[in-house]
Structure formats: structure tokens, C-alpha cells
Length: 319
Image 1 (cartoon, rainbow, N blue to C red):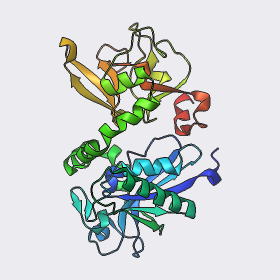
Image 2: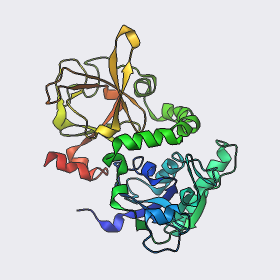
Image 3: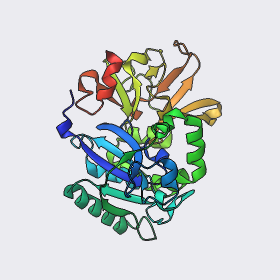
Image 4: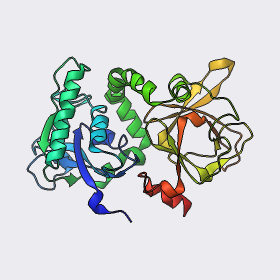
């Protein structure tokens, strides 16, 4: 049983809330991410009313989290990496008051941490323009209509098309991806960095998980997002961990790979854009797929540690 007394809420406005759920969802210690409206005076507003810019509300997400597993400071870091904090008129393709950015603090500690985080971002020089994201005391939060909840899962194709077309991904790539590699070099081993950032391949049969049989889940070494379950792992005889399917299809993306004189399908993680390995069509499962994954791209969470490390929702995989 979860102790609700240990859970807190964080509320962030970052433009269209469709794009603000997936970055936080499924991370360790995150219990839920709800799309909704906040900051205005109108009670129980509709999507159409908020979009009219007459309610004072912003589109936002409210995150219920365990700060002992995923601290508020880390949520703030992740939040900044999803937005253009220099844009006072909206976010990317979406313009107007309801798409402005804001951090809504729920207590004085969150207020102090948010102000400090904003100051550090300003001092970093990452952006040439002033940071205009507001830091505001939390007001009543009204969940959005059901069809907006988990939109990235319900309407995957439309979500991907919208997100790409909005310019958000391109902005994030330009302002964050390359700058983060220096930090990753400090936190990853040389092999982990070579595999995940430089599309490297570790030696077969001489890696951590190729013959690992313990029950649990395998998460992205960079982001912590769940990728594969031991229930779908098998010995393919190739010397690398092999799986018949990912836990969440949306967190594993495929790209054509024509390196080394071959045509293969590369597998990467959605959130961290880590190189994971390749997928082949010679697997034993119902889909006939074999996900051949580098151990260096993975972190293993034992079944008995799932709740403790913030992955309690995945215990059902082993019930």
C-alpha cells in the first residue's frame, strides 16, 4: 500500500498539455499526471472556454509524486527542458494567454526551489532572452475533459504529428540535447556513454544482462523510463539481452540504420533518445520480433524493489 501522506503535487503550465504529460509519465516516483486548467477564476471551465482566453486559466498538468524517489528539484529540471521559457505569448505553434508558461507552487518550499531553479537557469546563459515563466501560488486545478487525458497514448499518430509540427521537439533539440552530453559523460560509464550517445555496441557474452534471469524490469539507464520486462526476456544465443516486446510501445522508437553496409532497424528510447540496440524479425513471440538490446543502455530493477524505487505500478506484470 502506498502512504498518501508521502505524496505531493506539482503543477506546471507549459503550453499545450498534450505535450506535457509524456515527459513525466511513467518515471519512478510519479503516481499520476493529469491534464487540466488552472490559474483563472472560472469554475469548471471547458476546453473551449479556456481557449477563448477569457477565463484566465492556463493549460497545465498536475503531477502527483513521491519526493523521496523523484524530488521536486528534478521535476523542475525536467519542466524547463520541455518549454521555451522566454516566450510570453504562448508556446511554439500555440499562441495566447492559455498557452503561457508558469510554475504553480503548493507550499513555501516549492516556492523557494522554483525561484532558485529559475535564477540558476537565468545565470546559465542557456537562453539569450529573459526568462519570463511566472512562479505563482497554486489555485484550484480543474481536470480537463477525458479525451485530453493521456492523449499521447490514446491518439498516438495525431500526437506525434502535432508535437513535431509545433516546433517543440526542434527547440528542445537545439537548446538542450547537445548541452546535456557533458553531464552524461560524468554520470555514465565510458561503455554506457558510448552505447547510448554514440550508437556503440558492447561485446556479446561480455555484458551485464545477456544471461540475467532475475525477475524485474529493465529501464533506460539515462531517463529511468521502463523499457522491458524479464517476462519477455529470452536467450536468443546472440550474447545480448533479447526481448520479444517492450513494456510500453510508445517509449521505444524505431529508425532505419544503414551503417556497416547493412540495413537494420535501430531501437531508441523516446524520452532520452538513447541508442538501445536493434529489432529483428526472427523472434519467438506472437509478433515474431527480437529486440536485441545492449546491457549498457539498461538498468535493472528487481521485482522486490519495484515499489521502493518508484515503479509500483509495474508489480502487476508479475502477479
